Length: 284
Image (cartoon, rainbow, N blue to C red; front, side):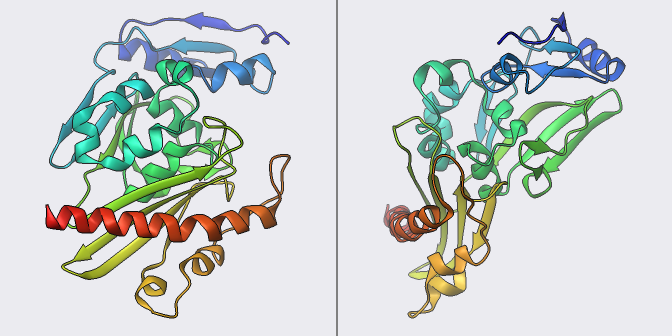
């Protein structure tokens, strides 16, 4: 199937792009296109105009410092994955990005585009939510920062206004004494996960002080669950604690019962790996 007809604009400045979006209610932003173009082809999206931002300057950087990693709107998944500095500042980025689709798609798809596409079956929205990151957006009205906790409104729905462009995402650095881990199960590596789980474990000496889990492909939005009490309790069950807040659903890929089973399988593994990671850092 071919896309419905649309106008096309390739602005050379951010101001031009924002003005175009403000003036056209049905316009959509095109960056990597790895999510949008299939929707166009299946006519699940029919924008009146595509505003191609690939010619905009200054949006392709990946910058790192002690506070975290900042990813520009045009930075490709492959560029973030290849950044040694980004992996050092926040190791969960590389852990998760290595599971995003396939190299050809990572070479074109953008990390920020994946975030605002808000697919709960994608890895990066969950990573931003688990780490407590944020997205900076711009419009003709100015700029604002959207915390991850306020970004995901529903299935494939973010809280960006129609005339806003996400210009940068911020992923906080791994705190001292903390560790992370990520695992997912897919039919084939690079396919959408049947279930994915990430863990962020914070420690103080030998004590575990905080434990949070993030889930991919379990609920219809990225979900993070604090399981600290269940981890600190010798009789606690972190997977059961997480499932009490999750809503696994049936679809053509897996049943809700199977997804719940995978949560029970993956949670102990990622918790053990993240705890080991935290303690290795402490001993380094």
